View 1 (cartoon, rainbow, N blue to C red):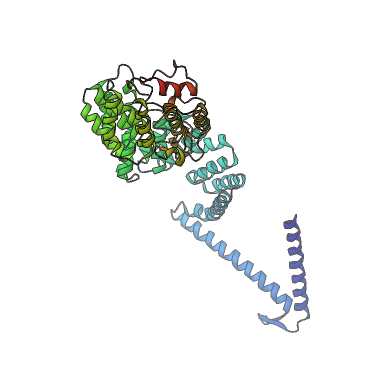
View 2: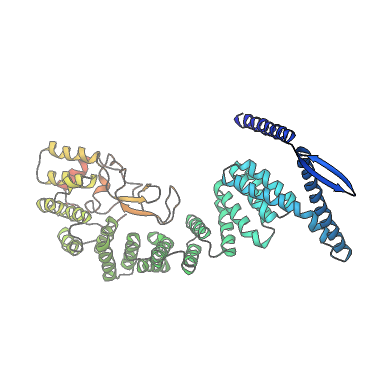
Length: 489
């Protein structure tokens, strides 16, 4: 509305200015005298301006006719494109102007306008490699996925635009959730442009989600060769992929090859906790306890973790509680001040019914970092030292409402997972799980059985086990000596 009013006002102002100028010219005395063939013509000021305007128009028409005459003469002399070039100049100018307008509309977020400009540019220029791309992107912006797909398919017809078409259809399939087709298109796109970083990352993510570990390792090598991935990150992610291909190590019927893959994963990234635990178990299966011990100690020194403690306990499953404490002392000395070291040693002291030693091992952890595991251990210690039931229940009450402590957390979406996996089960990101305390920690469940993994002896299958009440866990810990650990989750 405001723009229409502005146009009317501008038109009226121009008309008023022309009328005022014409009036001034009429009132101006003098003029121009022209003598032609002895006849003298006298023109006033207004007549002189009009004559000059007519002369300019005639001059422009004369130049155009001269250009047409030259093009015709060239055509007669054998230049068959002379006439077409003459008539195409205007079409090209209009076409490129429409193309520029389409790009501006696309950058401004006006999808419908960009499609209209692209169609106009196509009529004038007949260059689909330019206009189809604008049409596809504008259609996606406007939500017209069918038209966008048609435009991307047209781009597949020429070698120079094939990659753009394949990548566009791939992104459409990803948005539709058709990951199988997107994976095939990503492989084709990478074959066309091996150095394209976005396609490399997309293909790697899709292969990891499809558990195509061999293909993912090949894509990872391509990223290293093309310089889109630092070597240290490559080594870790290659270890993650090697570990993923060996995840069936503990399944019944695991092969020697799977054991070797677990060992290879640990070799590629010694500080990767799941790889170290699997490699240690592979060595235990082979009877190589010394190698298993060495791997676990090296990784524990970098990052103490409950899975490492479980695997370390499996090296000598039949040892007595006292012997286990003595052997775990070697592990504890590698990171004596770490919270996980304190928790593990306190658990072992409780198994051996050395409750004062357990309290000393735990230190101030229950007050400094009161998570569910530390508070449950304090309840077990109080019960073992003969404290009143009210004291024990007080610790248990705090444990049941306390955070669970460090867990596997996705760095991308902050999703919490109970077990490590190469791909986040929430957002699908590859190699983004870290062992840390979440920003919004989960509250512990109503049972405390999982919090004492080294106390309860042989851990039974979670699907068959009946979880005891929290009071029963503490009473069993204080009153009955537990058997040594034989298995670990």
